Image 1 (cartoon, rainbow, N blue to C red):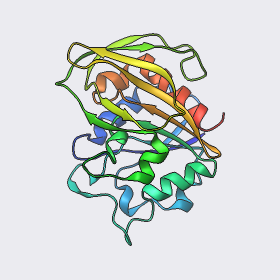
Image 2 (image 1 turned 135 degrees about the horizontal axis):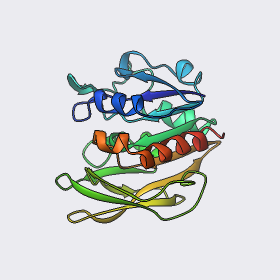
Image 3 (image 1 turned 90 degrees about the vertical axis):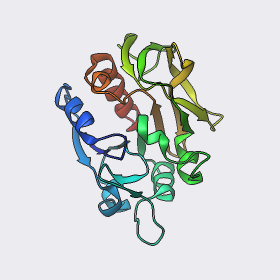
Length: 218
């Protein structure tokens, strides 16, 4: 399976994810990393992949905080995310991928497909991630703990199927993983993933790989 992974924004450098991928037993998954999506992605390019993983916020990249999406310039923006999945594409949104949209800078087409958006997070602390439902994504995954940013999110879609929750001293208990169908496609959202410790954790790696396979319909 060929997987297109988007990463590298102002608060989430690509190095963390790339180091995590290096430590992962990827088996049949082949990751192709894109860091400056604004000037690279097109709908035709994205359709060549079995699944799309978005770990990228709304900045162009880690060294350029200008907006990724610009009408008349960006060829793959919020509407293209929505259309790609509705036509049968698979999307996995991880951590900073949920920072696109929200109340400050709404991106309704992206939020429509992602099913939610980031609100805030307390200071980094130990988070406890717990599986709350058995399905294809959580199969073989055990609960784990890592220091991370505990994302607080607003869920906007009514049809989500939660399967993961995270607890921390200052963040309470929140849904941190869900899946849904969108049109003919599939979407998975995972909120853990700010630190290298999470990306190198074997249980998170299982989650991510299972999520990609499910989103791709495999």
